[in-house]
Length: 310
Image (cartoon, rainbow, N blue to C red; front, side, top):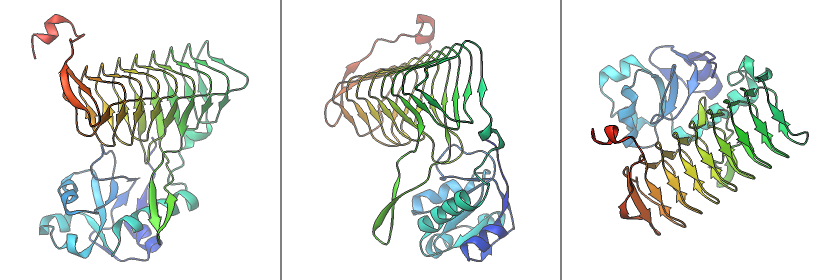
């Protein structure tokens, strides 16, 4: 993603809130516990997230008076802060304002489409501007590829699949639910296959929902915003990954398996059919049931010399 700059002073004017600290430059909004790049402004909604403020990539935060007073003096001096009554609301109000009224989230490359050689796109498919497609890609009937998607080489996207659709995050404004605008993209690496009517949502902020090399996704699979899928994974029909969940290399999700948000499934693990994963799954583990529980181990598909090192 391309970074754009905005000063803390400008953000202060938008929010109508005075800032404490330096007039730093911000080029990304993000959640504190995510993988961060650039100079990020975040918010703190719970005391447990204060520890993330020490990261060099966080230059400022929106937080409550109670949480601000818990910070040590060195942290207060090294970053910029907005002290407000409702940090989450102010953070997403800023996000919404920047999206609607500025070019903060508009990358110059969004209007440019790049296509490699031997790309076959069915006449009924929709490929928006700002999509990058490498060599030997097939996009089937009625598939929709949204702006901000990057597709590697030797990728097949079958009929009716939607890549880069809006992620789903609900917040409340005076007890009325509303959807937060997602502004990131989707990255599909080489040799991936995505089945019919599967949906891959875009990321919430800068960055990508990512599908690893040689992963195979069957029909009617849903991958939510900010998910990360490793290499050589298999997702069978009806599998669901909710927001910010992740699969390490070689994971197999059986039909209708569900991975709840922010959870990780370890390398070469197997999640059984109809299973609901409520906690992280270690590598080489078989889990089944609701909630999913360990019922065995998997046979590693890694070369024997690699397994001997474990």
